[in-house]
Image (cartoon, rainbow, N blue to C red; front, side, top):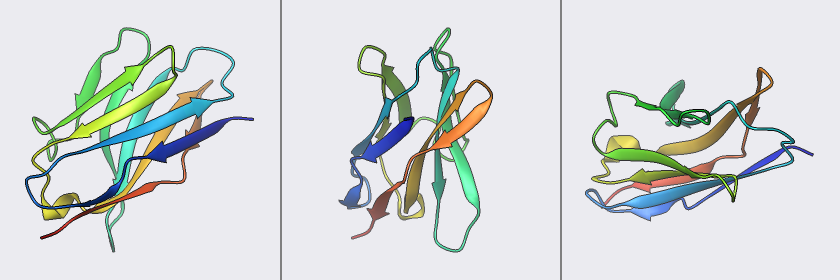
Length: 116
């Protein structure tokens, strides 16, 4: 059974940091692409960052470039999102997304709240 489980969300003050994790299981071959998305209250889901598993190239949304870093631990099949210099506008539910055999898979999401 394919499964993505996010963790690491929470409440943090502006300027603080959090690291999100996404543990992938049940995928029987190499994943093609892994991404982070987020959905803020009252807004559409927004792509945040992505990484290809072949080559490991990364891309970021302009709103997080220079502050967020996507990475992976291949043996553990885990994706990370290191978030630094957090702003109140980063408040959202963050979702892990995997594209495998051209099919998108989603985790359940983890809440990140940036507030003083």
